[in-house]
Amino acid sequence: MEVKKILHMNSGVGVHSYAKNSLLQHKAISTAWPIIKEAIQDLCTHNLPTTFNIADLGCASGPNTLMIVSNLIKQLHHFYQNLPNQSLRYQIFFNDLPANDFNAIFRSLPGLLDNLKAQIGGDFGPCFFNGVPGSFYGRLFPNKSLHFVHSSYGLHWLSQVPEGMEMENKGNIFIDATSGENVIEAFRRQFEKDFSVFLKCRGEEVVGGGGMALTLLGRTDKTYCYAYQLLNLALKKMVAEGMVEEEKMDRFNIPNFMPTPQEIKDEIQKEGSFMMNRLEVSRIDWNFYNIDATSVDVGVDSSYNIAKCIRSVMEPLMIPHFGEPIMEQLFDRYRKIVKDEMSNKKIEFINLTVSLIRI
Image 1 (cartoon, one colour):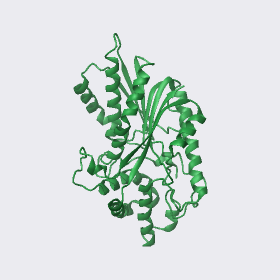
Image 2: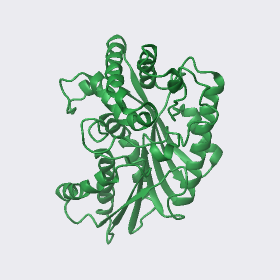
Image 3: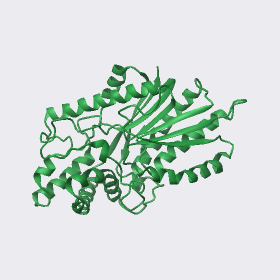
Image 4: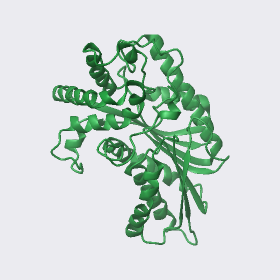
């Protein structure tokens, strides 16, 4: 599986689209905003360019990338309007892999600008928007061309499934309690390699004193991703019933790794391009759809929304391997499993947010 050719979130604005099912990612960005805000404020005290270049890496499609861009522009405008004889232009880069639904972002830009004008007035400065297709595990921009980089829920995705893992993780589609130590170590090494490359490339692209704010799924113990463990269980049941070939399941591995805070720290220090300003752990209760009063799905149980969220992320990876006909059955079973688990215990997504300064 060549990840960079097929990895993308479900496109469009349909019932299974990422745009309609990314409230979890929205919640993660909102939770990380105080750290992001602090990072951009610190940057402004040292860098006052006339054109401020911002990149959102792994932007996907839908409202979340627009939200973070809007928040950053409003924060910068607030800072600059208090300075005499200072005007600012914004250059925004939306990056994701080539299969991403960039058109959905571009169609939403007039609405973004209208909202900004309504909130902060029409004098906030011209905005120049750019789409940048390509893997962030490689160079994307010229040397010293970016002032601030944001990425949310992108860096736990690996550039590839570790080599030699195709049949080493039998019975699992991700790291599980039954995965061998060699499998776990292979995924860890792949993450370390990818994250180091990411830091090196951004180190060449970000100006001295520039910043980054990165949020990714992480862990604080040996549980890597409970959401995938439950999806694994649903798929196993379909294998047992003869609906999915066992060999197909054995050959499928999700290219993810959820690091610990220490694993993040170690790679940042080892690579050396950035100084770590803050590293925070936050948790999002799986039941947040019902807890959060802003949820658009009030009255719908959270298990339904969690299943739809995971489906919007996983379908583009799973359809080429398993075929589209089983998806409805698979995610219906998955929702029921998630509902049962949520009725018995409190389950949380663990997020790691790190703010960095280019040395």
